[in-house]
Image (cartoon, rainbow, N blue to C red):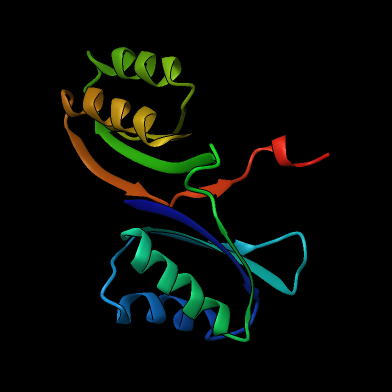
Length: 161
């Protein structure tokens, strides 16, 4: 089962290495990883997508709690979390087909961020299914390059008062 792990850690050198090393040493692959500062400059949030059964996942979280630099661990898997990812597509775009590609980008509320003689670079954000849908459509034109960020996730407001 895929788990969305949100870990609040100290914003210090080496912390990311310790967190990811702990997970990989136990034989689990991190499918997606995103790290960035939080509203508190002394803290960072690590969002990792890990495939593990319940027993193994529990072992990972217990081990993470033992790290001094880890302050909070949240499992956003079953919370209906808000998930987003950023992707850049560089698509073959001959002049006679360029308007079709722009139309697809518009339908998906994506942005054209670079225009070349024979290609367009499109920026899109969204959940996995939206980005996969765009990728499938752009494949018909020829994708030169794809760059994706790791997934980020946040719990919904339903828990707050």
